[in-house]
Length: 124
Image 1 (cartoon, helix red, strand yellow):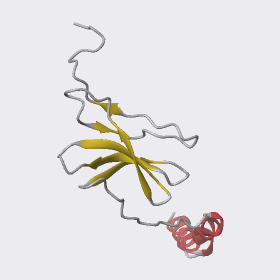
Image 2: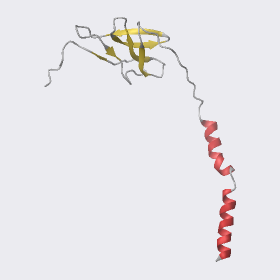
Image 3: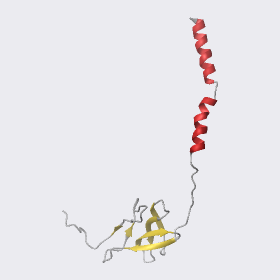
Image 4: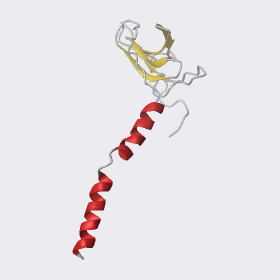
């Protein structure tokens, strides 16, 4: 019994001594993993702070930018420029925003905006 146990322990120790089998999958993965590249850009504003809410594969960013009067307008940043998407207007239509995900790769941008009506659909 003792010789069988010794043989099992020796086989286990020898089997664990070969690091090449453990590192080969990591080496293969490293060869086939694309290198990720990041770039950080400061978003231009419409007067005050800006915040991006989503980004697409073209590098377009949707979000909002503050105006000097304290309101926030939905905004789209493309190629280093800001586009004011405005609001729905009206007395209470002061703020709008493009929330995540908010834009796709085809150029469709969706957002939200305040309106003067509390319940535009007449729901209870």
